[in-house]
Image (cartoon, rainbow, N blue to C red):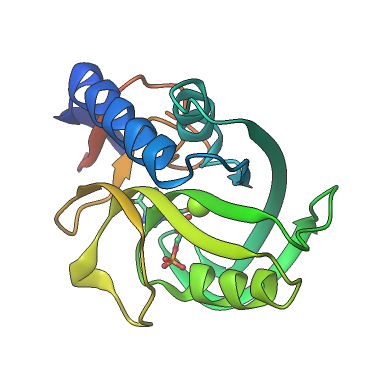
Length: 176
Ligand code: IMP
Ligand code: MG
């Protein structure tokens, strides 16, 4: 089985929206420092682009989690593969994710991070698939709400491929 990728959101559309979110965050955190927490690997492309467009002081940290489950469906049981380097206590934290799908990974992760005592904790996601939600997650900043299709690019992968695409594409499988 091979696959092809069609464009859902162009590079220009994505860049424009990230600029808007950067401006919004800069307004919301005026006079403060924002601590961006990137969820690897998917959130990395979005976080770098977003960070460049935030005008208040920014610090960054990274974590990697793996949710047990199949390639296209998460179970909600999250294992920390790489933890943050810095404590969150007293910080204004924004978690930066590629996509909220069922919400299982994020609801687990946010609860865990909240226990570390940040001053505030918000969630920023490039993409949201509201139709797929199983667990309620409050998203503070959303790039785009998209229909229930498997997407790649801008950090999102299909079998570890396509993360480097500068746009959001949809994977179509070619039956052979
Ligand atoms: P959730 O726990 O179901 O919300 O799953 C979130 C994770 O599943 C994301 O961080 C992605 O890694 C992955 N995921 C969900 N939908 C897609 C998709 O359309 N393309 C690529 N990865 C996805
Ligand atoms: Mg992710």
